[in-house]
Each structure stands twice: as structure tokens, then as C-alpha cells.
Length: 499
Length: 73
Image (tube, rainbow over all chains, first blue to last red; front, side, top):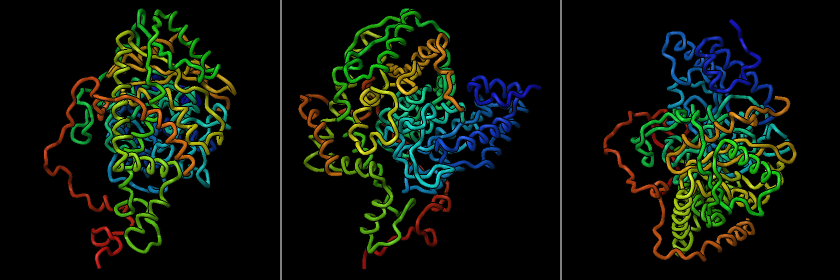
């Protein structure tokens, strides 16, 4: 029996699944390998929680099922969850002091669905507090091996941010600390870190993945999705992550589970790729522009056709999103009052004082800023001018996409205007962070599936991602398009030095 | 923080100028793809009593009750 121990972390999820099925490697050996790697690379700051006993017990159970022929589709595959998903077996913090040490009495549906197929949980991953951020600089919880809360590092260049809010989910996969992870995307939080870390990540159609047990940020935007190195791996995970959850999530779509891998191998000849003029303006950095152009050229060689389209309200997506998301957040986060769970201030005079001090101590700057914006735009006298107006423009933005999809099958463009910036470069300037979200916000507001795949490298050796946006429920087509690209390029197999 | 909030509301001004006469607000993004009704489940108790586990992370609990400062004297 050959044991490809040292190479385990270079195997794709699909390859590793095959090794586990063939039993050339056990789930326990696999889990041990990745737990050991986690310790070697603690400096990245990706893990907020690990529990070897829990992980190894899950791996042992997976080995038993592999031995007796009851293996699930993900049997023995190790992955970690963004700390936005609540878990019974690990603390669930959302990167916030408010939930430091919090233990959920239940698992998120996404966690349960993956575990039901045999996936083994390595631990919980760092993120921006309550998923609010684009750089993973806003976590208030110290990562394992770190004495205090610190920004997560990008393995391609550790002086740079990994993106956010699923920054650690992306950094961990890029650094080969796990073959795949889960992330959540409210305004780009899967796609932008995937792009910045040179991995592949997909946000499905709003309603595909259950939001039950995902600590809520903006309920009409939040979606879970997989982050892995290839489209093939993402397709495998997404197929099991999505599915109706009628009793637990009222916004979950009543659409049967689907095999998103079924068309991966199909030709994309004749497929029309729409290129919105608004995504190719002056704001896009030269290195990003060059990598996107080269990728589109590759797509032409594969037989796809470029079509010019327009998403005329792209710039408006910034104010619209940053009204709607904080409005929903201010409502969702009102539950953190220090009564039933989470942080409570140590000293207070009466109930109102307890609420005030608990929330002032428990929430970080960015979260407080968004709660204030959200409360303001929902307040009497401002509701129509801000919140309602934003929701109306949200419909116009969604209609713009439908107009564009009359001329094309998918829409492509950059994920972000630049590569990952330096840690600290924009941390005192929230507006600069918001503006950099311009290309991921439109698909979020419209609830469309969208993904990022690695297509090149720019300044400071940092990766560049191409964004593909599909029409509702067209995830399989997006993954097919990404997979076909990954059959003729090797960007998704490159790895940062030292990992 | 006030400066940052004001800077944010400067970019919001562009949004306020858009003519949205006759446009219905969009609440569920999938609506664009056709009518969608948010479902309600049957009003029946489906969860087992899980009080102990649910109160495990509570800041202050006594005899199964959440404790807060006195509100009514």
C-alpha cells in the first residue's frame, strides 16, 4: 500500500476522495496530516478553533463507514468552516467579542449537510467580525497561536491581506492547510478573497443554500458557498451544500438538490460571454486588466464568443448595498443584548445601561458603524429616502442583468479593481474598502450565482481572479466554464512559496 | 467616526437622485426570476425541550430563567 503522506495536501478534493475510497490513505491519517500542517503554519492566523479529539473521532467514524461500504460522497474529506456557521462541537464566534467562547446548541444546516456525507471538520476559520469587511482585518478574536486579534495573512505575500470577509477560508486553501473550506458571501465575501488568494470559490443563487445556523448579517443577501482550488472541487461540495431547507429557512428555494458536476466536461463552444463596459473602465488596475484580457482570449480559443453588454447602474450598487446590508444588519444584530447568550458587561446600573455597555464593549468599530448607518436609514422620516429607495434601485439593477442576459449566457469581468492591498493600507478608511467592492456587489444585490477563478498574477506576485456571473440557478454552467478554463491553464494548481 | 459616516452619506446622495417612480421595491432577490412566496411552516411544536443546552452560553441563569437587572420596582 503506498501512502502519499507528504503529498496529501497537494491532492485536489476529488483526488483525495478517490484515495480515501481506494483506502490507500485513511481518513484518520488525512486528518492528522492536515492538523499537523495547521500547527506548522499557525503564523497565517487562519484558525479560531480546533479540537483534535473531535476531528479524529469524526475521521475514525468516516474510516468505519469507508470500511463497511457505507461511505458518503464526501467521506473522510477534511475541511473547515468559516466561523459564521454555528457548530455544536466547536465555539462559534463570528469573529466578535460579543460571541467569544459561545457554544451553539445546534449545527448550521450547511454543516450538517456536509457532515452527513462524511466530511470531517478540522476546525473554525477566522473572518471579519460578523462577516463585515473586505480584508479580514476586522476580526476581534485571537487566532490559535496568536496572543491577540490580528489580521489574517495572504500566503502569496504575507504583508498583504487575504481579502474578506472569508479571508481565512481562502488563505487556508491557498496555503494547502485544507483542500476546501466553506465561506459566506453577502457582498463578495467568497469571490473577493478567492480572487486575492488565487483559489476558486462560488456563491450560489440566493436561496440555494440554507441560511439556518449562518450567523445573520444581511438576510436578503447572505449565501453560503464552497472555496477550493478548482471548479471541479467546488462543484462536488456545492452539490451537497445546496438543497431545500423548508422548515428552517423561509427563504430557502424549493428546488431539489442538483449535481453541479454533470456538465463540467462539456464543450463551451459557442457560449456567449457578456462583458459589461462598466466593469472595464479606468478604475481597473493595469495588471488586473491584462490578466482578465488574457483569460478572455483563452476563452475565445475554447470557442466562446465575447459580447459587449451593459450594466448601467454598477456604480449605484455601492450606495444601494451599503444602505440595504447595514439596515438588515442593524435589525439582525439587535439580538445581541447580553441577556440570552453572548457577552454581558460586568458593571451596569440598570437594564438600559446593561444593553448599552454590553453592545459598546461587544461590537468592534466596523460593526458599530454599520449598525448606526442601518438604524439611521430605517428611522422614521428617512426610511423612504434611503432604505425604500435602495430597494427600488435594487430591482432596477436586477432588471439590468435580465436585459444583459438576453444577449449573453454568462457575464464576466474582474472580481476586484486591484490585487490584494497591504495589511493596514486601508484599515482606517472604511469608504475605500466599500468602493473596492464595486464589482461583486451587483450579483449579490440581484441574488445571482457568481464565482471567482484564478487567471493570473499581478503586482507583488499576488493572484488575480476572473468573475463569472450566471443567471438564476445556472451554477452548473458557471462551473463548467471555469472547469474548461482549468483544463487548459494551470493557475489553479500553482502554490505560494513555502507551503 | 462622524467624519467617516458623513463621507459615506456623500456617496449615498448619488442614489437619492435616481428616478424610481413606479418601481416596486425588491425584497427577495429571486423575485426577478418569477413570483415567490415566503413560506410559513405549520404552527406546531417540533423542537424537543433543550433548555439546558440553550442556556449553556447565557450570561446569567437561575432555575432555568434568564436573569436581568430589576426593571419594575
